[in-house]
Image (cartoon, rainbow, N blue to C red; front, side, top):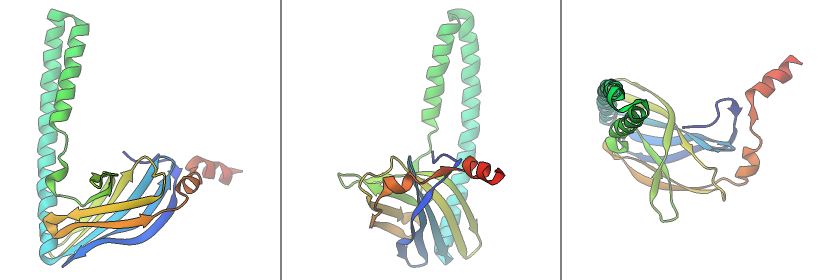
Length: 207
């Protein structure tokens, strides 16, 4: 999930603190508009005991994901063997349908849980006032004994029509309670239309 990697977006906002508490702070570095949505680049800084908590959760989540990936590969291989065996008895078409069902079941079984608490939750409110948590595009982190830093990008799609957003931010597992911040991004559709492909820039440089 994310914007077209060949497009240069338009920065429509920068420098917004989302939430803070003792020894932890979260902020949006910039919000970039694309025709299909918004990328929100965020950063989280933690220190002392909060940094330790973030590091522990990240390490635990990484180990859990690796174990799940291994188990998923093993299940997929077993399902493939079952499909090949079924093909001998039921025919190729039936075996392919069986394999598709099994693959879908395996994918659902190993979908990541968003409530594992290993990253910052960032979302927008729905008309009903509930939080709609956003998917991440990319992330990187660094940690020492006393400091933790997370750089993470979120993807909001489709592009908001009215430009009025209420951002919801939370990472209670490391001491950052849920906070809500209103923001206005006027003329989003007009500004998003100013994006251009990188290849256009490269072709202009050649002429």
